[in-house]
Amino acid sequence: MSKVFAPLLVVCGAMFFYAPFLIVGAPYEATMGLVQKIFYFHVPSAMTLFLSAFVAGIASAIFLFAGRPAADRVAAAAAEIAVVLGIIVLVSGPLWARKAWGVWWQWDARLTSTLVMWLVFQSYLLLRRYGGPGSERLAAAVAIFGAALVPFVYWSVNLWRTVHPNTNVVPTLAPSMRGPFWFCVAAFLCLYVLLLTLRTALESRRSELDALYLALED
Amino acid sequence: MKRTLAIFVFALLVMATGDLHAQPPSKDGFVPVDQLGTQEQLPATPLVAAAYGVAWGAVLVYVWTIWRRLARVEREIAEVSRRIAAGTRR
Image (cartoon, rainbow over all chains, first blue to last red; front, side, top):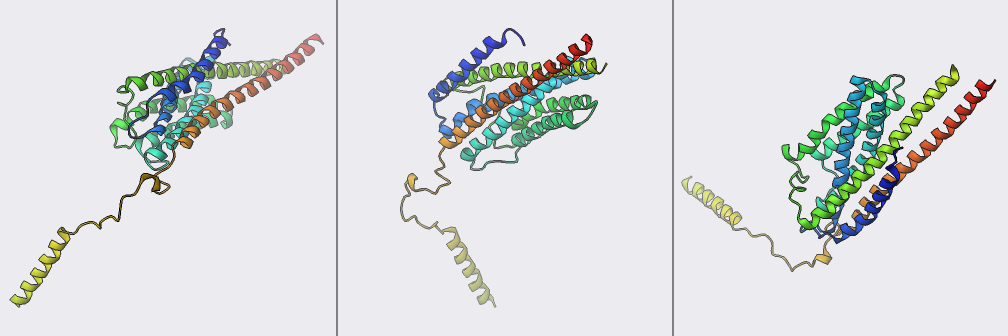
């Protein structure tokens, strides 16, 4: 693992320790009140999910077309983290919706497309685990499609009629909300780098183990 | 016949006018917000706490699973390395 891992861990821990104080200090939204505070974790985790989907897709493309095994290891790590972040997004969203919309779930464009993208990355992991020899190449193609879904998920709120807030919310945030929000985004990005480093290290060690088993057979 | 038709049209007009001027039933009184049904006064605190709890829980459980898997792989690497070393010494 890289030398920056330990300092980054300390910085990330400090950021996540400080984030709740900023969130509590941020003003209540006029119509939604307290429940809108979910926004400060929901949206940063969604942004990091998009980033992870892109990383998985690009790394998979490098693996498929350039044949680099290191890229496959990064793709596997990014896809797994995308699934974890997807769980956070898909659970925190309905908890917010229950109060704001009166329902847990709406089959609208943003929610449905996010669920589909999460299922694509779930299928990537299932393919790698149960697909047998050579499944990593098939899984890589699935990850590329998963990454291609990101722009559709992002713009779905502007293209179709939906109850979900559109993409203007973040650029037009009030200054008192903007600070805590971007701080949480930075904290999630920091966490993402840590998780990706740790998970890629696991894949690298697994590859070394496979090489050792081959050496043992020879 | 004309008289019957006129009475029918007049009756229809009276009914239609009656509908137009129909008022919603008057309220018996104002309802204070703290007396609303449970759905309207759903508290936000448990929802916010649950959202943050799930986020933290998911991350911590995930980190724990990575450490567990990493520890297992390290043990296996040590074991296989030991077997390879024992094999080359023979």
